[in-house]
Every structure is written in structure tokens, then in C-alpha cells.
Image 1: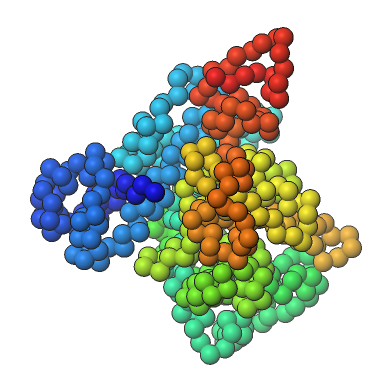
Image 2 (image 1 turned 135 degrees about the horizontal axis):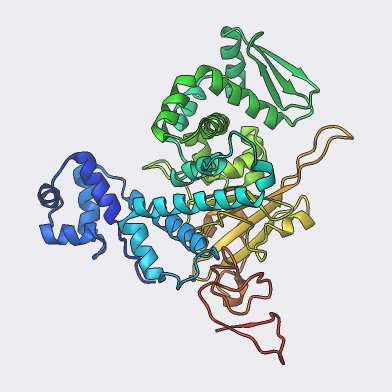
Length: 463
């Protein structure tokens, strides 16, 4: 197998800037010539092995950060944005998009922000009857999407919050027991009652009410979440200040997201959870029992194990509803998900609704030839009462197939057979497959041929 070349010009420039070094000084410390460094920083040459060693030895740089996944995320996001019908001209070549993602990531993100603003305006105009007369009818980025992208480009790993949660969980007692003690010391009373709300905190009476209709893992999670909001507010606020969200709504959503992150990291402390994941070969049920967490909580936590110097397997994690809409998404792999709309219908996560209570395994291949092991399971959430609605979701967890040996779920699967891999994509508009029987719309970058006298799986042929 050929060794993958690493182009990491932006990372090199970022590191040099943090160290306040000139190109000449940086090149001398790495033992390369100034022109050679210049070429690497501009992605005209891949990072050499000697430079990788120099980064580790001279600066203690975690060389796994050279492939943080930002380029793949930007590339996937730009391709999806350019699939919007508003772009009527010829689509940029994939090589040009890759250069933009690697050489000018700030410009690429500005383009994505501009496209998101366009979509926001277009959707607002489409429902003008609702917007007319409203004082808040103004152009603004979607707070939800702004927060989603914040976590997306942080690799879904927030170091300061993760370490604070790990320190909190390092005492002699279980994290939940310690949380009750800390809250009691702060004068907060914890009450359990059959309420419709999972969690309610009355600031005036300092009473935290948790619903007995929820599973214990949800109760414990909500307890730790409220603890984060109360006792770790300065840390969360400092993290939000660094993020510089554009609206109060986005900051509020992100605050809840960070508190959620703390709760998951406290229930499943990084070091202990990473070791347990490796020891159990990532058995979600065993990990859930050991840490008192649900399948979704365990799967989500596995996707956050991206601490520098102690990374776990790079997983992707996604949650979809019955309509196929992605409600949670994260990928530490090269596989990226559609920013808008649903996931590829050929992916096994959709079939999980048809087989409740079962783990579905799938070997999949994307159009770029990358191969993945995919695991799916339904995670329906009962309302806890006869008349309460049941929320139905399915989760997908997976990794590149080269990591499959570390997963118990991949045992006894023939990963060598070429026809064992299902052909999946990201979005129909940017998927290059010509003969997909589930294609909903034509691919943007292909010409179509229409023959009125012939009908195959699709009503057109893709050149």
C-alpha cells in the first residue's frame, strides 16, 4: 500500500506563527532549506519524514495534528455548497477546491458563511408572510448551524472542558455521587419527580428537579449537566468568549452544548474511558454498563477521543430521525456528512428503524475509494408515560476499515471481498456514482443524456 502524502502548509504556518519564528529560523530548526520550507508551507510539496521528526523532537508537536481533518471537512462542505442550484456556471475542479481548503482555509470558511447567509435569506423570503412586520426580520446566521460548525471544526473535542471533567471525576466517589455532594454544598436541592421535563432548575429556590420518567443514564447526565452550568460557569464562559459567537442565541446554544460535553466527559473520563474502550474492543453495551451510560452517550463519547498525544480511533458519529434528517453529526475521519438534508439512503443507519434492538453492521465505500466499517442501532426514547410521545432516532458509528480489527463488531466479516462494500455517498448532488438506484437528483458535475425511448433505473443517463 502506498504511503499517503501529507500536505499541511496551513498547520506549518500556524505553528510557526505561534512560535513567533521567521521562515528562516523555522527552516534552520527543522534542518531544511528556506525554499523547501516555503514550498511545504504553500502545499507545493508534502511534509517530509525528516520534518515530521523535527516537529516532534524540536517542538514537541503532536504530528497527528498534521492530519486534523479540517481540509477534508472544508472540502466536503464546499462541494455540498457548490451543489446548490444557485451556482449555474461550471463547478470548480476538485483540485482547485482542495487547494482552497489547504492553502486558504479562512477564505474557504468565509465562502461557507456567505452561502449559509444566502440560504438563510432565501428561506426567510420563502416564508415572507411570517417575517412581515416582525422586528427581528433581519439577516443573521442560524445560531444552530453556527454552534454545529464550532464543534465540527474543533474535532468535537474541547480540551479545557474535557480535562476539567476528568479532574472532577477523579475522586474516590462516583461522579454522580460527587455531583450531588457539590450541589448540596452549594445549597442546591436535588428532587426526583414524574415530570414532563427531563431537568428543571429553579434559580430562586435553588431546586433541581429530575424526571423519574427518564432512564437512569439520562438522569445522571442531566445532573452532571446542571452541575457544569452552576459550578463550572467561569470555564464555560471563557470557552464561549474565545469562540466569539455572533448572536446571543448561538452563545446560549453553545453554553448548553458545552455543559452537555462536560456531562459526557465526567460520566466517561477520558483516560479511563479510552483504556476501557481499547480493552473491550469498543463494545458499546459493555462500556455503557461499566460507565452507567446509554448507547448514544457511549457512541458520542467515542467520537470525541481526539486529545493530542492520546487519541482513540477516529470515529464518525451521526444521529438521524425517521425522515432521514441528520440531527447530530461529527466525523474525525475523512467521511463527511451533508450539512443540509439527510444522509445517503444506502447507509445502514436508515435500516436500524426496521430492526429495533439490533446492531447492524456494514462495510461501505465512498466514491473516492475510502472504505469504512459502519455500525447502526436504533435509540428510541420513550416519554415514560402511556400518552407521552416516543422520540425515534437511529445512531451510526464507524471508522476507516483499517481500524476494524479493534472493534468486536467487525469480527467474522470478510473485509477482503470487493463486492462486500456498499457504495455510499454524501449527497446526491455531489455523488459521482452514475448508476445508483437510490439517486434522488442528478449529480451537479455530470452531463445528462435523456432518451425518451429508453428507461432504466433512472429516467436519465449520467455521462
